[in-house]
Image (tube, rainbow, N blue to C red):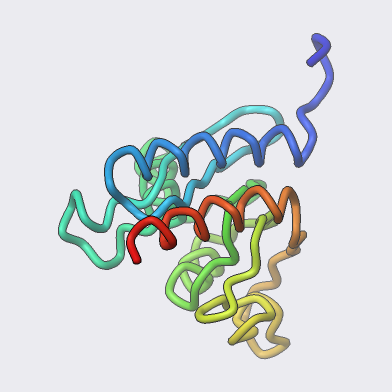
Length: 154
């Protein structure tokens, strides 16, 4: 990256993929997320449900919690979340509550996605806050991480 140039969606997604790979090394489902304001990374992380014995410790929740604590504010306006898989309903609800401006995700989640695959939490006209969503960034690489992880366990 040239000095003074903002990172692209693909570059930030590669950082989320690195977090997903780290989660996989810890034995977690390989989902990673990065929370960004401008060109500053506010928080990064991966799934921690097994390590923390916490069903809510999805990558999205992990980074929202870390950024909110650092900001000392439950509202995170002006941020973009990069996540390797389409957020589930729980994570989508948390994204709305935190007032995240934009979500960029990689792979669709046919069994639990809450943007367009199963539910439309992030796209619903009745939700009190609108989130801009950019799906499909590095989708094949993100999907492969999950497919390889689950194939190795069958």
